[in-house]
Image (cartoon, rainbow, N blue to C red):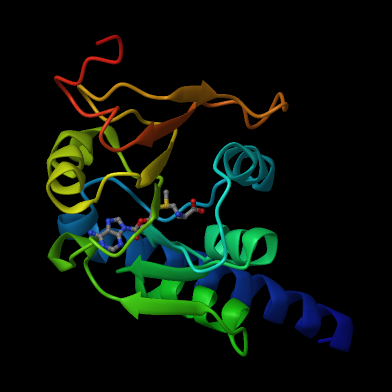
Amino acid sequence: MPTWLIIVFAILGTALVLKLLHALSIVAVHPVTQGAMYTSTGRVKIRTALDAVPMSAGELLVDIGCGDGRVLRAARRRYGVACRGFEINPIAFLKAALLTAGRRGIELRFRNFWNADLAAADVVSCYLFPDVMRRLGEKLAGELRNGARVISFNFPIPGWKPQRTLRADSKLHNDPIYIYRIPESLPGQNSNP
Ligand SMILES: C[S@@+](CC[C@H](N)C(=O)[O-])C[C@H]1O[C@@H](n2cnc3c(N)ncnc32)[C@H](O)[C@@H]1O
């Protein structure tokens, strides 16, 4: 067999194995993620969200379900804030660990965020799934302090009132981005007292 053909087969084989691992990892953690599978937010959406949520150095951004860690790296680059990511999918976690290796100010936890206390977060970012958003709203309402902001890509938190709903200036990545603030966005808060 010619060498070039062996190289083509090796590349295709590796790509196939990686795809399979990716799919398997999503299936394996499904009982925890409940549909919030590993996929990444478009960079233009991350830029749009960060533009709308200014942060000061010294604040903490937490991405619950950080995937490959791109939101963390973008926020760190943009505002110099401390960043923490929770991720339960081993492939996503490995990718995030490789891509953030050697960067200061970004901490990754291979952990189910439902079991973590998010009280220290100044900004929580998420891109999850409709099935978990109501429960997430209850968790965030119980743990976040006044002044904390929440960025939710694609899916709203039921009953919460967004401060802003944005769309990136992109035909491909124009799903909504919801920005909330505690306590104004919480259910039952009257914004016109
Ligand atoms: C749609 S991806 C978003 C990734 C990243 N935040 C982004 O915007 O590019 C959702 C991620 O959340 C993770 N995830 C879902 N539920 C989780 C949980 N309970 N604990 C930790 N990670 C979770 C999934 O494994 C997946 O990687």
